Amino acid sequence: MSKLVLRFAPSPTGLLHVGNLRTALLNALLARRAGGTFILRYDDTDTARSTAEFAAAIARDLEWFGIVPDRVEYQSARLDRYEAAVAALKAAGRLYPAYESEEELTLRRGLQRSRGLPPVYDRAALKLTDADRARLEAEGRRPYWRFKLEPNPAIWEDGVRGPQHVDMTSLSDPVLVRADGTFLYTLTSVVDDLEFGVTDIIRGEDHVTNTGVQIQLFEALGGATPRFAHHNLLTLPSGEGLSKRLGHLSLQSLREEGYEPLAVAAISVLVGTSEAVAPVESLDALAARIDLSHISRAPARFDPAELSALSARTLHQMPYERVAGRLADLGIGGGEAFWLAVRGNVSRLAEAQAWWHVISRSACWGRDPQDAAFLESAAALLPEEPWDAGAYRAWVGALKTVSGRTGHSLFAPLRIALTGQAKGPELAALLPLLGRDRVLARLRGVDG
Image (tube, rainbow, N blue to C red):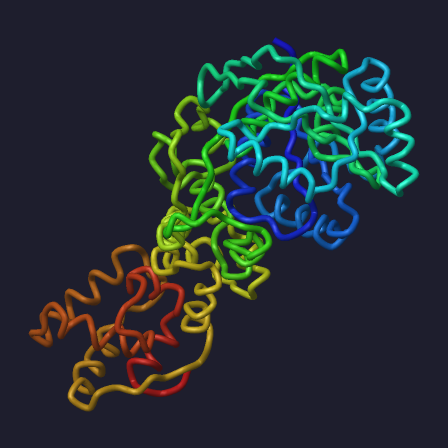
């Protein structure tokens, strides 16, 4: 088998959302797992809507997940290649000019439906003579160019959906070149896939019908047809489809809201498959769980509430070395001991800042008068440093004996005095981070 070459081909006309990420990661991670090539191709021939800002945003989004393309291409820089393909298809008699306006085509389709016929283009343009075409162009009409489909069905083994076929007689000859000379996705995508040696095309199931047309285009241009796999699409919990235009669940917004990229990646890839949606420790671990045959045929619902829970679970098991740099960027010290102490109590990494402030700042939260004597006893019984793992247990055990308190009445006043919070990380882990002087000051109700 040849080395895998896969691609992700977004149009830089808006921000990527989690549905786009599903396609990007399936391609990028399968290429990574196989030691293949992952191409990022910007489908930017729509010059009215494509912007450099959106292209840069796409690159930032992929970088957030640790995805670095092996190759980056822009369709806007390859117009000469599409011109050459158009010339070849014209010479082969597979591309022909048509002149009907959209209004004329709409009327014609309506008449076909009224007669019980499928609204397929009737190839009237093929019957035009040279004189007819000259007359139409003299009227100011400019031709657009249709690809003449062969009647034989397109058949392929889909990596997700299994055996597939498209009855090509049920389709209209697709337009590949607009009247203004610009190219449509159907043509440019095939030309690029051929020239870049793409071996597998993994994309959303909304492209299944396109595949039939593109298989014939691959054949007409004299190249090998890649393998195809069409995954199910992600929807909102309501069942509504995701939209770049409407900004649904954009990756930029998820990043700004503090979600863990590994959690976003895991849920985007695993939801709607037979694999359990669970935390992963790395992209390589996520890649190992991908099996295209395990993807459901039904749409997959992406629930932000499920993402929030998964993001928290991902943090709770994340080792220190994976967050050390990010903690430093947030001005958080304390090293591994701090992270292991607080990670189970944060759902976003930025929340660790609050616990670092609890540890590092001189502060006193006051104390309930009825607990004053108890806290003075706690201060008196506090052992000298250094504190090992058993110091906290010994201290609390002695305090329990002296005070007669147990359970909530024993632990709650200590927690509030030392952290100002009713809940939080285990005090046994926080005590060494606070240090004896700060613990004494807080037990006695003074800043320190």
